[in-house]
Image 1 (cartoon, rainbow, N blue to C red):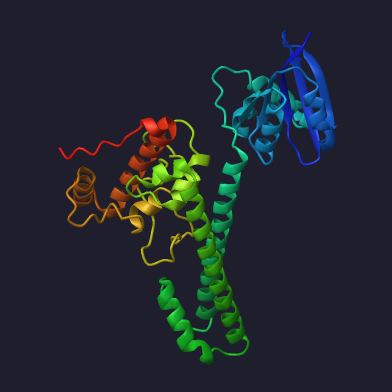
Image 2: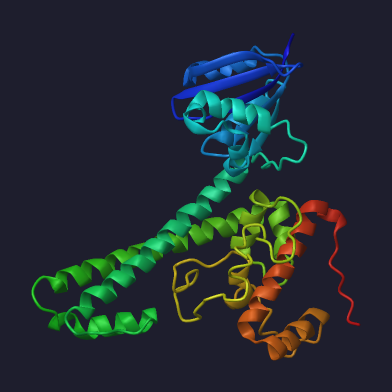
Length: 341
């Protein structure tokens, strides 16, 4: 009997493999497979269904297994948990592989699309840039905390903070002057790196056909347009997390953003991809349409008047999520209606 389904518990160096035949009986049980032996083992199997958890390295292995004719399905780890054995018997790699093998065959299971290498490279740019932005925000927060210890309290706005620091830099006692100067220099270097990554992301967005189509939508700039093609899945529902946008039930009504913070950050150091361009003035801020009389601008103005600025930010971001999904789903067949009725 041939193996038709395989579950693989991914790891750094030692993997667990569990395969079953068409009767559901275990036919390939290998609790310890080294990294260099995993691909040869899977390559010699007849084409079958392979299930894995969507974790580090999963997309890479999925692309390799597909080259050998296998059908690969990735699942979120939380969806595999119900199929694991309870107690100590379920606390090992072999049991996890068996649970994955069982979960991948469920008809109602939800799967994660396998990303191509180009998509992962673009997302790596975004993650690296986000890390620099968070580090810059942490640096300024550290500066505020250090100088507050000597009685100097500065406002949240970065320009006001730097102005206050420069005014008091020579008056800081002891080595505090050195600490503040080094932190300011570090923040400046992060600004340079972030600006460089912004340029790279803009170039990547212009080179990709799907990203160019997304940038034609109101309120979607290069950062969002380059990231969404690697993150879109099924059509976003109301009050559900939009693809890459951070619009969920808990936060949709309370977007905390500050217009005076450095580009790309809020008071928490994070801004959703879709909510950010809807209210930060980039790509033609749709919430500040001026005297435009097209249908979208009139709707945006009335929304701000009826519900307030920040609720309008989230509403437009949710609309952009659905428009972006339609563009990515239907490609050239999708056209945004421009009627002025």
